[in-house]
Length: 265
Image (cartoon, rainbow, N blue to C red; front, side, top):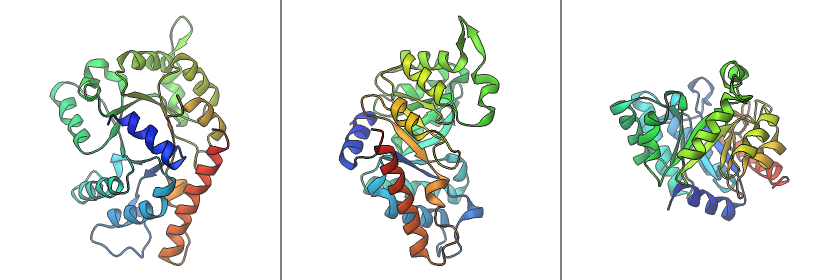
């Protein structure tokens, strides 16, 4: 099954568009994890607590780029798949030639990936050619510095992020989505008007304080899309005195976000 078909089925089955970001920052992992792979142990408990409310899991590659980290990521992906939840690797890849082809081999293990369009279509071709996988192209990101380049005018009053969105729509064979942050709701709406058929991955609703209503109203295409929260869910239990309370808090945070977003669906 192609990724966006699988995602649509998951969204309908669990009535959720929540993407749970699995970013196990070693400096914030609770002390009560007893494992030689603490990131894997943490993620397993998070998945146990949140999978009923998750449309997708989104591990960020930055938290796994060492030998133990990649082992933890492999275990995490397998465990999420065992719960019936697809996995989107937030890697923001984009390179040329054989390097891009090597980066794209990670799609043998995960269901979707984020990519950087700065090098152009040829650099993304190894990802785009995988029609069964999802490819989310960075368009308008949620960080404060995004406007430094992404809002530059590139002609006819069009912003760079708008041009990227339109080009991504041209690349799609039904397998392309966009990353568009919830922290700039007017720009989120503008991108949706340009590309009405592309699903969005919308970050920034959690600790970054993005607009949840806009994320749902403009992030979904035909009911399909993802609204991500990472730290706001996985570290919701910080300060808890027991593992049970810690991970219960993560489950409760995922459930609250699901209900909050469903108010606007």
